Length: 125
Image (cartoon, rainbow, N blue to C red):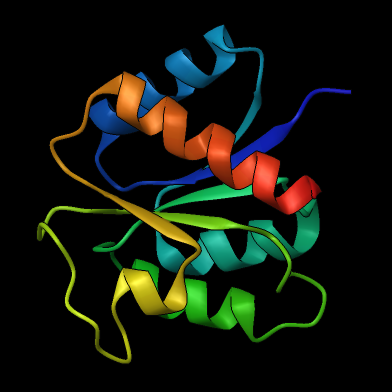
């Protein structure tokens, strides 16, 4: 069975890039274009990992991540935040606090792959 990754990203081009790249690495990809859909799919599909853009319509990625982490059914799913705001500050609602890891845009696919593999390895330990 393939490892399932939920990609929550509202930018169509980035979503296509991530889908193609993850599928090339033999992951099954589930996609959400807003925070509400990300929460719904996390609950319904229970992916092995979530890659979450922090700024999305309807519900921000950080709010969606918080809802996922506060739900007993989904709290164990690792979340990798993708942020366009650079290095996050240690605050209540930043990716470093709410999520299990973060990577700043622009990112290289190699850096993203390393973060994905680390979080998947950590969650299986």
